[in-house]
Length: 463
Image (tube, rainbow, N blue to C red):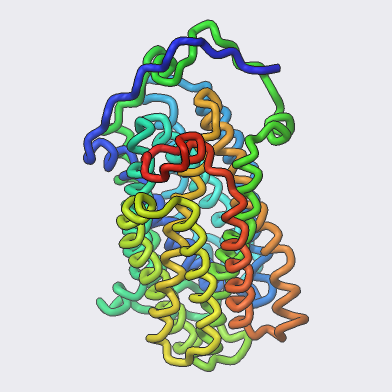
């Protein structure tokens, strides 16, 4: 059953000022601040709480599993919601509040449940699940909000600004434990406890997350239903038939299916990096023994992982600002593919370096890839999606983000134990090889709006 569309031409959405586009995405600054803290420190916290090395990926599985469940539901609900705050804003705000609370509790697990007990580890894992679920409640409507608010010609700019803010937040969030340690905050803790530098970082991150989201919620006025229908060529009588998620997946646009292959080879290596960077860098660069999770050297390595993550986020922020220009002189697919090649080479180089400062060179390629992964798939995808179902399809597209992470989580621990004898640096090598495969899949993606416009990649739309 096909959706009914009116035959008149849609009214073009108002051109937004730069600062209006900035406000639409500003909340992402805080959300990514929190997400960066989670990525850089969750393995460290879980290890402090007693998780062994090859089981880390299983604890991390709770994060993509939450995304698998939450994002399609939130996408479908936000498509059908209208309140005084708007369509997407209620979900963005609710997710931010819960994220903040989970960030406050996770590093304090040893103080809620007896330190060193299995209960503290389980409580920490539950807070990680809650944190990631609420991040997903916030993330998905933000993706749809940019598509809702920006006219076709400004969407490349909209997603690039979003990527810029994401990476600025990630730079600060990733580096925060290192900064606090340099300021004199204690970076070591007793066995089974979390260092104060990490705990205070999560306090600061949770607070800034909520504050930045409030800026977007109260500074962005979403289009009410009547205007939204006019801007998207939808008549008031149009009825969207109820269809199951499975039916929608079967009917997904070809572009979405093609992007799913690239996403598989992009997010599988990212998950490996987030889970194994701390033990990999501690073993390979600080020469810590396997199983060490509380020594001074291990915690120094943990802080340096934060600096590395801040570095790739900084590089990504700079590259995000260049993406609109690079797309104009080439195409989205060329920029996307080359960025993934840079990421793959960056991961591979970590094996050959032995000086911790050379990791900052490795992170250059990872940063380019990260910027492209955050913006290019959404820029390419949204031109092929029906406006009335932007939210639910963006939610379903998140399956291409979480399923590769779930696959990675299920099998990476076994690979580490039985193939690499818990030498974690080889997980970053696998990450590099996989991301290179992703770059080879990009040319097979059909960029609907660009190709429909005669191949002119500078048209600025395509969402």
